[in-house]
Image 1 (cartoon, rainbow, N blue to C red):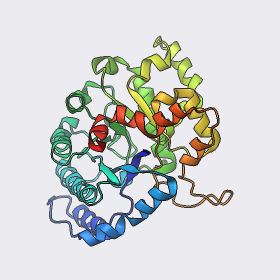
Image 2 (image 1 turned 135 degrees about the vertical axis):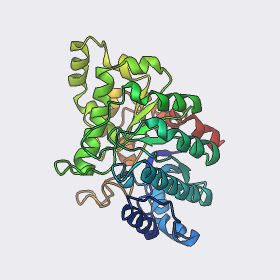
Image 3 (image 1 turned 180 degrees about the vertical axis):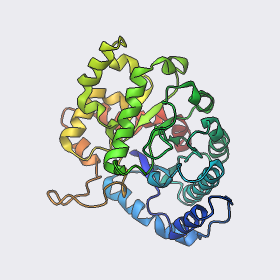
Length: 334
């Protein structure tokens, strides 16, 4: 089996954006309202994702709302609550209609300056009622201005306690940037991944306080695996010891690296045990590479081309690591 751990509903029906447009237009008086999306529209909208799974050799995708659309900086906590609930309810409809293709991952109702404890109820609802297996946690709800405390701060602890209780991991994933200095998919996303890891290096006590907490760093880990000894050196200079000992019991990486040498560096830097297969297909890049004629986000071919990986390594990358990091996935697939 091949599990793709990083998929977003980037092809959602137009009715979702119409709902969001109406919601943003009434920021001073948030109302949940009603999403006008039919089952037929859902069915049509996911066909590209299903075809993409077949083209890239995937069996099932961990599927969450559009990351760039989370938009936690819009409105207040009630705006974020209604938007997250609506997006998660739509994902639940998708995975109910296509249980062989998709497993749910939830968006959180985060708001700048509001305690992440405010997200606990939605996480519980999505895991316990909808059967979702993880959440996307935004380390910067401000949209590029980083106004909240680092993810290592006790500010986040109530939410981590609930994650541990439910035994679900979080993918650390920023949303759209409203800072004009940072384009979102090429700058803000990679900055977010890198910044989260650097925060963990600077203040590692949090991982000691939550030894079973699991974070997934997307997009191949931002800059960190490709400058591994730079971050090893920073950790040593800070008296943190060896970077692998500091992070790799709790921090895992996806394989959304659209370049053969980059994929090999990722696997050599952090090790096969800490990488999980992912494509983020129909995501940041939606075109084909003119040099190869294949989709940029067809990451399986890069793994297939690495001759020093053993069969056991490939089994870990494509299936076993995902079941270990996302134990609710293993239970669902039974």
